[in-house]
Length: 89
Image (cartoon, rainbow, N blue to C red; front, side, top):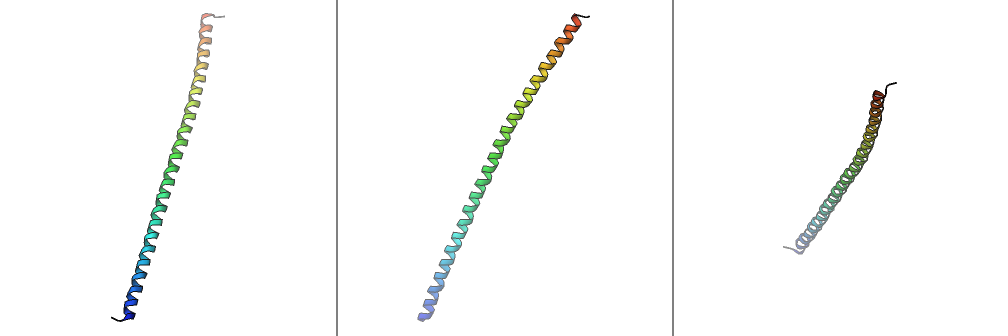
């Protein structure tokens, strides 16, 4: 084995090592980016759920207030009709 072949083998070994390191770093970068993206997506879903929950609370409160108002109106109508029934003109 000559010196040229030896140095060529060492050079190819270094190129292979550098290529493997660069590939590993690229793979790691992609995995970290995917993890960050999944976390961001999860946080978006969590925030959307929280907003929907708050909106539902507001809607339920509004519906409850409307039913209370309708109930009061019906009670007034009932009192008026009872009064008219007991005190005919």
